[in-house]
Length: 345
Ligand SMILES: [Zn+2]
Ligand SMILES: [Zn+2]
Image (cartoon, rainbow, N blue to C red; front, side, top):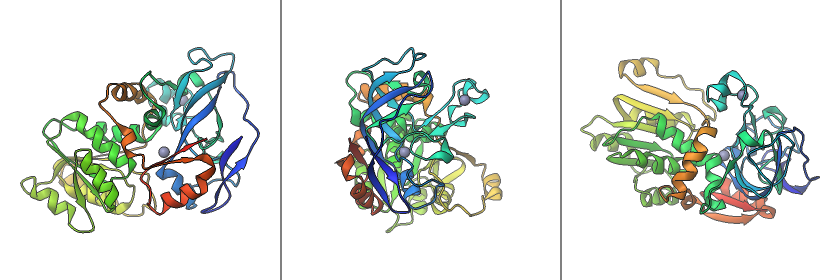
């Protein structure tokens, strides 16, 4: 089979591999019908993630189940499925409390041996361990280009919004309008805010944020903190959803909320070396939440929201390419010439 593999910093190639085989009795083999490139793949691309040469890349996938192990019950051959970007065991202390993202045996697709040695999603096939737990059925009426977002990006945006505890009438500031930020805009709107601001520096993203119902703020041209304050009696947003992961974005998020406000951060941290403003957080009664999303419990409700037409995550897809074109796709994505690229094997 063909798969995107890591060969060094800035060097991802499509190479030939043996078709993967089931290992555990609960595994399923998925024939991938759509994969996607994610911002966190760029962390690997730039050498910020510990990874071995030849590791398979990609953690966002939908596909059709081709084979199942003898202990798989709910998932059947021929089922259309979407996988979360990481797998959990289902039986450890954290899993039993519903915190699959904190599972002791958590492993991430497409991240090499250091993250559990799973296969990659930018490939023709992938083995999914404990398929009954780690795959969700795609309902009729939801297509691949919608369902793929439930495995990571949409769920991350939803996790940000939910943990922001947005109330009807609130002012929300979304910091970063990349794919996750755009999902956060859509999900924030499920909670009935009076207005949602989206802060970014890329024209195409700001434009899309506007189409999705946000007030776009171009951080190259205006001071977003004072702009948000000017719409909120000088006080600031009730909730900020931070979807970048850089210290400057986290600072913007903290600075743009009012006293008593909430910052919910989901951006994957890159080169974070600033000091957390403990005094400011205490003095201003801030609530700060951060984390990578606990995907599993959200997949079903988000698929239902898509099926009902209340979420349209596919709006962020800017490029549809073939798996063979992955090297070029990564160059484009890295240059910010694409908002979201999906790859068809
Ligand atoms: Zn991702
Ligand atoms: Zn577990």
